[in-house]
Length: 215
Image (cartoon, rainbow, N blue to C red):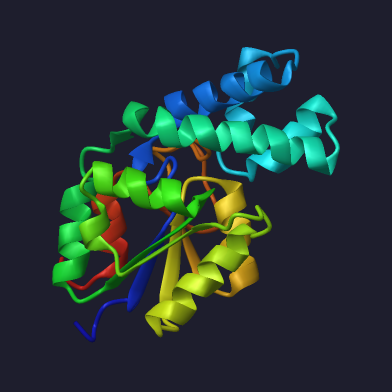
């Protein structure tokens, strides 16, 4: 246990634990329809995989902060009512989480999904049982990725932590929060065909190999 590379592993949710892309794309279309916005091109939908949705609505629709928050509220509504049922757990994730927990690694989630949505989707897919801490976006939509990571580290009382995520946004948050980073190449943002200046995992099992001493 003491030989693990890290004492705690903090997971992103979208594109790392679950493939949530269908629900996120549906959330965008629902928000656009709710506010009477012209739909963005399909190829731009992937830009919503990672960053806070309020920033993306402001960017692609030129909305004011107030209207971007209105769009985000509709986005979250779809997320709670429908998108959570449109997600799928990546096949090796439960096994990787079992391995890490059995090795004594503390587990947490740090996501920009709203707190109640994150908790509900993890419970629905039977993943909540693995995590000591689940940190999501606050009601004011004011947290950054680094904020969620810092809060997870603080609540776990474990300074030796690593962030696992699938996007540059996750990596930047880890850097700002002062923790190491593992990028997964099976998610939305990183490709297994590219080289990166950080540790990468092609499969969930590779994550546990990089963290614990059980191999």
